Image (cartoon, rainbow, N blue to C red):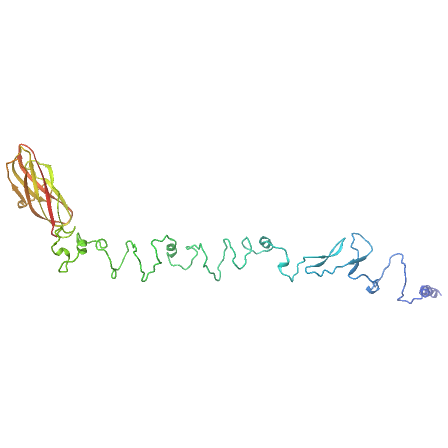
Length: 372
């Protein structure tokens, strides 16, 4: 009996509302208290909403849901964004992974370096065409064209040079013209200093006067003279010019000036004149002028050529003797003397006199002729 009463109690509301269980349809249901729906509300059961809206609460506190408009955001770079308390809006300028860097604001080289983790150096970003690099370290490039390069240090910037080449290239050049290499070089008026060796087989134009060392006295002059009629050296034939030969040649000759006033001592030889002659064989002669005072009495005079100062030649035949009693100037000729010398030597005109009462002086001239 009790079971029937319970079934009747349960079916009473359904019968009253003319609905069927388990899927009844209610109109205008008021629920007091909490409503628990185990299966959720199907979307189709909600009231229709405006297009492009969602139900929600964009406020900062709890409130009944309302329809929130959702913008399309179809423009390039646009994206749907939500801000609490405001709702949905379209954000612009959004970068796309499919876009290039041109979609972003201008970026400086420093900003770019700030986001890189493996950069080297500093300064501005470098691109392929006409970059300006400041003290770069280029490593070992696979290729390089240095047509417009400057400042390459020759001592460290060029590899493969031979020993000493870098030093030579860095030295201040002398002369002018092209670089000279070892084989068949053509030099123009070079100053070669003192070479350690040289072969002059094909050389021409060597000046005999200055280009050959070690020649004997007069040899360079003789070699430079025109040949004689027989084809020999000019010194092999007599001169017909009426003048002495050049210095060092056979036929070189000369005369000293007339000396005077050399004070004499009776019966003592002294030098009345002298001359310096270079190595060779010379014929030398001269004249001594004796000048006694007005009261001087002279017994004899002597004159000769000697290579010893104030000394007559040991060969008595090489001096001359004269006498006079008158106190007047007397000239006595010293006989010719052949003088062979190997070094520059002074040759003297020696005079002597025996006199009394007063004073006497001498002077003279020397003549010389190179015969060898």
